Amino acid sequence: MTDSGETPLGEIKSIVSSEHLSNNHVASLSEVEFGLIIAGSAFNRWMVHCMSAAGVDDLGGLDVLVLHTINHRKKPKKLADICLVLHIEDTYTATYAIKKLEKQKLVFSTKKGKEKYIEITQKGAEMCDKYRQVREACLLPSMDATGKSNEELADIAATLRVLSGLYDQAARSAASL
Figure 1 (cartoon, rainbow, N blue to C red):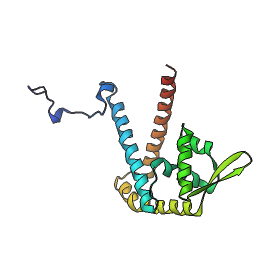
Figure 2 (figure 1 turned 45 degrees about the vertical axis):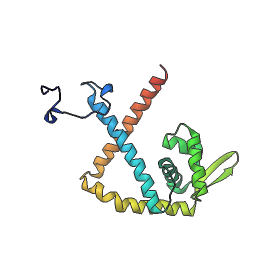
Figure 3 (figure 1 turned 45 degrees about the horizontal axis):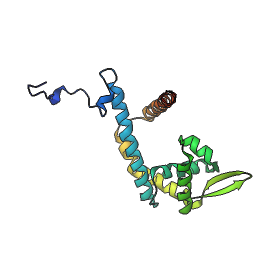
Figure 4 (figure 1 turned 180 degrees about the horizontal axis):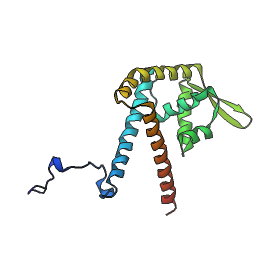
């Protein structure tokens, strides 16, 4: 500390986004949470711009995720399955995304008995392939520059899944208070 009460830059150990939530014991958790916040925002922005570059405008991040989920394995999907895979609690948000995708003729719905299934259209599959091409051109060279191997990226993915489970459990605990 200086005489004016300010901390010299050389003494800063870490920058915590929510100082009021941390103390010395859990400051790193606040750093992880801030990293998740900005990474989530950046990823959503990336998906929207990548899909736009692929030729489809006016979609939000959730719309893009729903489209890719429907395209996965080229099998018809029920709304409940889409929500389960994407961890969506409010099904109306997925329903709205599907309506937007139907309006752009990227997906279509069919009924089998009482169940409604959503399927990818040829145009939707082509847009997902163009998305992949844009991703390979714009994102992969930067990822290669990080020097992270496939194994290291797999470890990061595993850590994110573990964190997801921990936050889900904490949410259940908080909901029961």
